[in-house]
Length: 112
Image 1 (spheres, one colour):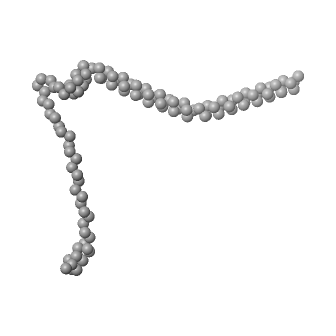
Image 2 (cartoon, helix red, strand yellow):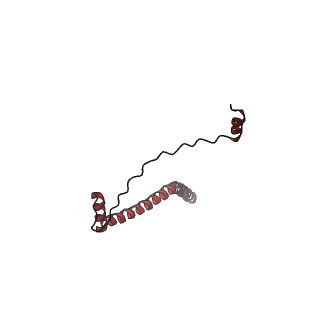
Image 3 (cartoon, one colour):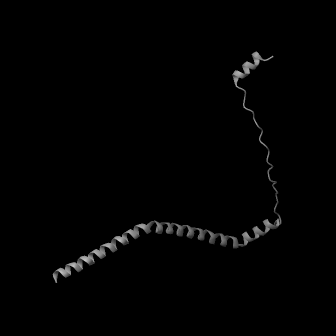
């Protein structure tokens, strides 16, 4: 009877140990996934807050009026409208590299 009890306890202890080791391996394997998911959640939460504030901002009467005036090219009474033309692209002049000093001397003394 005593040996039967010891065998049963040994098998139970072996089962619990293997289960514990498997659980620890799973936890170690899934920790980076959890951390990555947590970071993605925080980023999505910040983006959501930013978008909500942008929606509230765009629903304000001032922003609606400003958007309408800009799209229709209108102005309020007393406002001065200044139209700034797009700058034209001017080509940059190509600067030739300077002639080295020794070539300048050669040209002075040995040129016809």
